[in-house]
Length: 266
Image 1 (cartoon, rainbow, N blue to C red):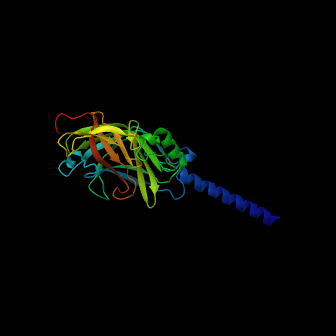
Image 2: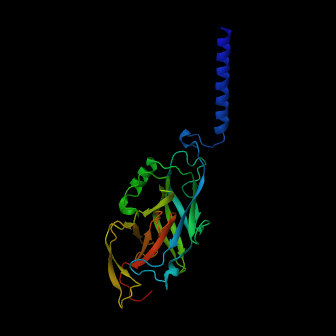
């Protein structure tokens, strides 16, 4: 009988000790929502996405003589909405109103990049909320996401080599995973993707006159969007999918077109 009582007291002592340790572990996390507590193996990451410029594409756009004027030199992203896998941002780094500045990417080519500090754990819940907010017809992947680490929505301002600043409203950036790399979804409420045919003019056409080009790339991973400052301009972006020549963590501006026939060369 005495042995049984001692065993019960020992077990009760262990339970109290465990509860005390648990309380100490989580008392300083600053978040009363248990769903937002760090998960096992959690760590923060600097999730960088570059904005680069490719010299030329299959249409002869952005030639060596003029591509520099479209290269990003600075800019910012103002956060208006987001979603992140539960437990992957216990410090609430992502908050509406945050401003992220384009800065020189530290690990790769000399492109400017945005950096979002959260964990990396894919979830269907985050993908579902992204699919509802930015459906296939408005993103560069042209289909729904299965799992995503996180996504952000906001207004993107880019100052380019020509000295002009262009604003793209309601832009989405979402991080997924493909093979050994992360990929980045890019879209906006106003984006037309490559599944849609649009008639636009190529200011850099090699012919004598500006030529209207019906743009259709089938399942290629492009998206088109116009800036607030000049709705007649059409910027063509290529997603960052981890496949060469467009490596992971890079969203490339690969074309600039006109919705109306120009009267003079740019």
